[in-house]
Structures are given as C-alpha cells and as structure tokens.
Amino acid sequence: MFHENTSADCLTTVTTSTEDGAFQTKGRNTRLLSPEEAERLAKDRVLVSDFKQLKLEKEAQKNWDLFYKRNSTNFFKDRHWTTREFQELKACREFADQKLTILEAGCGVGNCLFPLLEEDLNIFAYACDFSPRAVEYVKKNALYSTERCKVFQCDLTKDDLLENIPADSVDVVTLIFVLSAIHPDKMHLVLKNIYKILKPGKCVLFRDYGLYDHAMLRFKSGSKLGENFYVRQDGTRSYFFTTEFLSQLFRAEGYEEVVNEYVHRETVNRKEDLRVPRVFLQSKFQKPFRGAGKAQSIY
Image 1: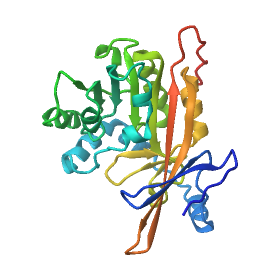
Image 2: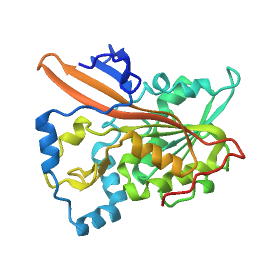
Image 3: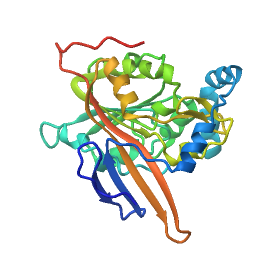
Image 4: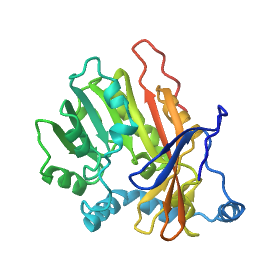
C-alpha cells in the first residue's frame, strides 16, 4: 500500500477507490522496484532483431486491426473515470452550457468517447483511430450520432488532421493509452499533428503507462524493443513513460507543461491476497496563446 508523503518531490495525493478496491496516489516519483525486480530488468538486455522490429512497424495497423477482430468491443472497460480524473473537461468552459469541441485521438471502439457523450450533452467530438475495424465498431454503436460526433480512420504520425478538423478549433484533445503504442521515434509527429487543430490556450489531456508498471515487469525475455519499449505476443507494442521523457516530448513541439505526474494504483485481490502495482502517467499540456515562442524541436 502507498502512503502519503508531504515532501514536494514525493507522492502527495491519496485517494481510495471503492469501485475496484484500488488505492491510488499521485506524485512526481515513479515506483520503487524490489531488488528482485531491479535485477530481472537489468538482465533483460537482448533486443528484438532489427528485421523483426521493421516488420512490427510495417504491420502495426494490421496487428491492431486483428486485435479488434479478436476482441470486438469487449476488451476494454468503458472509461467513466475520465471526467472525474480530468476536471479540465468541465473547468475549461467560460459558462455552464458552453459547447465544447473535443478530439479523442486514438478512440479505439469508443470506451472513452461514448461515456463522455452520455455524461455531457454539450460536447461535439471528433474521434479517430489507426484501426479501420475500430472505427467501424464506433459507427455501429447505438449511441453514435453524426450530429454529435465525427469519427474517421487516421494514422496520427502521417495523416494530416486538417483534412478532417479545422485549424485551431478544438477545446480539448484526449490522448489516452495511445502514444505508448507508437514507436518513440514517431511520437513527436503525433504531437505536431494535434498542435495544428488545438485552439491556443487549450490543452491535451494525457494518460498512459508509466515506468515500472506491472505490465512492464510481466514481459518475458525476448520482448524488448528498446529502452522502456516492448512487444506483446499479438504484435502490438507498448512504451512505458517517465515524466522527464514526456515533458521533453511535448515541450519540443511547443507545448507548455501544466500537470505531469505519476498515478500509482495498487489493486488488491483480497481473496487471493494479491497486490498488483499499476503505474500510469497523467498529464496536461497546453498550446500557448498566440505570440508565445515555440521551442526548437529536438528531432
């Protein structure tokens, strides 16, 4: 179990979730590994071959399409926590009934999109995904309405969002468990693409896997693609973020950091006395108001 620490650089916020029996803390420090975990990670130095890595990159869309073919709409739970965790969705309004325009970048089958549309009737949502199959699932959902939502297939690393969304028109972009599936060398292209359609002064809301998350420690030898980057058995990939890497990534594309912290969740299975340490990064980055200088890209 994680405990509160009042040090400015340590975990500072503690909440207890009664929904799933998980203890949650937020702060700037990542999880401390046990000696056994640290040793196991240190020994895992062999990387997947360059040939296989190129194949995985080339077949990334196919692998995600197959993922959705196997799992349909049943794999991910609907994310009703989004508005609770990201108060920005409510706070960015100038008045109570103001209509918001959002983009869910990497919408999957709508597990975040549809709860948002249900909870807030004054949202119009653009939504896109890498997988054509996922986009079709969204369009077939009974809650899908073209009056409130426009969904389209998009490779965020190369397809220009301006083909579907006007420049400087979006109030909030959600980037939730999306960037981790993209090769680290191409992540900046996603942020550059999003920057064009985001209104000045508005934000990207980010949540994704953090360094030393339980999922990272479960990878077997032979799954490592690079530093903090792994491939699953189905060919989909996952990167595990540090606050430093994410901050540098966003700042290099001209964003300003608002919030950038780890979320530690310890899920307890009392029946089996099993504790599962989850680590996520939850962050908010703002597009500066006009006139603010853009940082020089590191790429």
